[in-house]
Length: 263
Image (tube, rainbow, N blue to C red; front, side, top):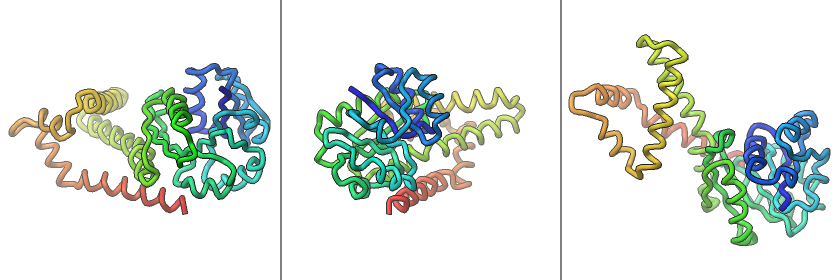
């Protein structure tokens, strides 16, 4: 199986780096408009750099498009005539629906994906969707490829903007929360480096507990919120300052922006 990728930037690079670790890197081909960056990526990950978009997709079974939405038109203008109907094209362009992708290249068959930055450490939350022209076997292979970068789930396309708001943009919101926790720890006397460790490990452990226990987050919150204790005072302060509302508004705004990008 030959896997190719157009673009080795932050997201494309993170996904393909994980793929190179799971599969034979000699079967993986990448290209980038910044040739030096693409060559450096290929060299450091043991895969192959190809100089052109047309060349990189030749004979590829799965082609990843790690291209920003505003550049898709230019890329498809170059490659649409050489895309084979046997190939599966996997786009990670935020907000761009399959219908629009098909308008760029009517002969192509697409899977749409939305990963997140946690792919850098193999802990991504990735959603994928497709039309009926992708077979179950092809979808399962795409899931298997992407599982090298973390957890993968298939969703209906109508949820992809929501996925972008929750898991695509969500890490930025979590990073802000970690930073705020650390700032609070520093305010209370903890050294800065130690504060980041405590804040980040607390978030990591809490997330793992939700996933591994299967318990509702509210139940877990209640389990550490003793009557007249310290935690309930902090919870009350968060509620007083609109913590939940701020998070809901952030995800809603990111979801709306994703929908705008797809128009």
